[in-house]
Image (cartoon, rainbow, N blue to C red; front, side):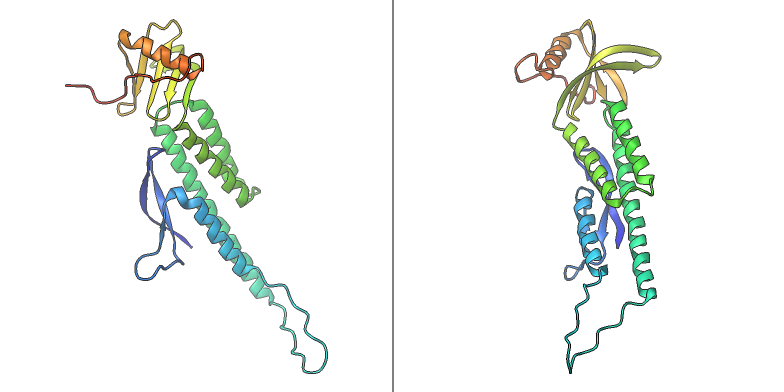
Length: 243
């Protein structure tokens, strides 16, 4: 039913994900309709409903009494019932594989993106991976939890967060304040406000900012904590160094 047909860039999450196509759909002349990863969950639900309706036997009707009544159809053979169960089992395995790929793509995006709230996000993924591997969990629950995890990650792109955590740079560990501006930028500032830095995702390391930018980071932290009213913030952005 489902097959890989290429890859697509997920703009908000910042990583590539495979796309799938529903091979039974043939819109006239041309290739099958392609569903991007952002539409994979509605596509799965639609295909499941279509398959379930075709596999569910219709309720038997009582034949009319009296002369001329047509005899009722014989019940389905055991072989037909076994074939339907086997089809459902294969569909469940394929769906489980698609959900596993979705979780792997989400994990890759977290590891390759800005390292904000890493412990919280990794814990969520660990719980999700255990659920996907659990044979006792229903497909509906797995689907719901994967959709929920993607929604949480997408919400990060529209949020401004300020939190306190341990900053590790080499062998040095310090408790600092972090300022996360969606997926656009991630900053840190020491508790005394004398040192600030920005995450360079292209270099996969922290870059220390000049002392003149400490006040801008401090103002951003106060705004994110709602200690100051919302305002236009002028902050340095990550990018290649000027020549």
